[in-house]
Image 1 (cartoon, rainbow, N blue to C red):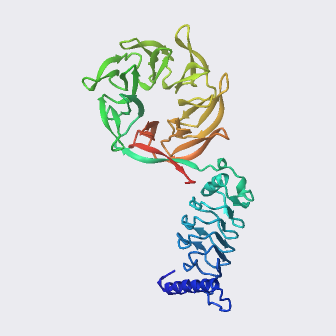
Image 2: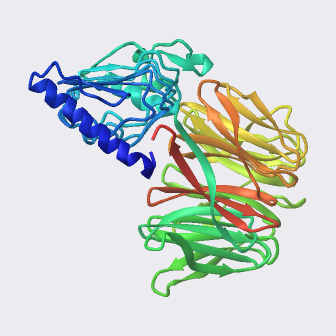
Image 3: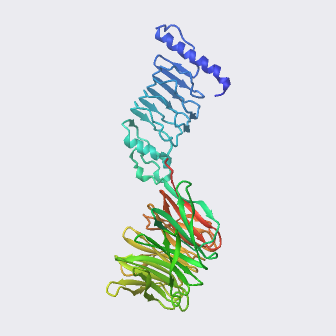
Length: 519
């Protein structure tokens, strides 16, 4: 109420005090003139048709009632002047909102009734500090049982107070359900999103992350400058900063591999050959230690590193007409050619994965269906096992796991991309996604969240979220990225980032944000 109402508040306060004083002294023949909206007795104040909660209630009143009043809200600190209040009835009103601190200071309150109002929700912790509360009546309200009311369900399960049965009015799936019987697990209140965190002013083709010298690093392949740009995390500033770079020509992949404590980087280039570099900790720079044979690797497009038993390997997918996709093995001093696969098939992608505990490679090619190779322990080589049927022109295959099940995401530039599940002897169709102009369909697991990100050269990038109940991906978010080529998850200082490379625009860094709607 405004300043004009202050004289009324003072008068009402003294009238209520006079009312109680006369009743206390036993002068029942005297009829005190109490405020029209507030009837005072020795232990009780009854307010009917009040336009707002009066601040003139005696501080030692035990019971206070607001019945069929005209006010629609209960402001913060409304009862600070009544610390001895034990019974509070706010019933049959048109109250739509209550402040979180409306009942602050009522440490002696035993009974609280908010029955038969227009309440759809209650602010979290509204009953905090009401240490003596034994009875609560919330009946007759139109509660919306969404995430904002999850705290009430949790409170009902832990309080010692008696609470009359109350029911949901909305949403439809909860209508007429007893709130007292709901479980907090029924409320899915955690949402996530990818929010732009930083933009790096250069184009890129691939992004990889690695742990080195007790810190996390990121390496980005820049095709037009021919560089491998290394970034490290600044723990003080909370941002990525330049660490080092390797300069080359038309670089397409910069793949790190750490053997024991030594960092090596395989640099794949379209021109000038591909090379292997070693991090010299004494000179504090990268030194080239080996050239990759140019007769086999003419047009590299992808690199995978892996370990089988105690041996380290990497495989290069070659997309030239005369090249060989080749597996290289570490011999203690360098990498040597171990096995050539799929000659002259113009492979665009290679994926390493384990199926039933056995190492496998999946090669994607522009000239045939994806081919699955299985590791043979006897020959210590990969042998062709089978092809993925009905999936021509697959640009890349990437895998992910849900519990014990193995899935793959297959990218197609023309036609639908696809999610498939391993069925014991072959991959079986699970889901199709429209994907005109797609060159990357990357599954990612961030914390307990499984995503798949489908890029496009002609439209928005689609982020999908794995629905465990439906056992498939559902649309989640759209990202605006120009010609995306890779998506990489980087976890640092309990933060999760998504690096999105771009062939035509800037390289974007997104932060994975988790929001609790019940907070």
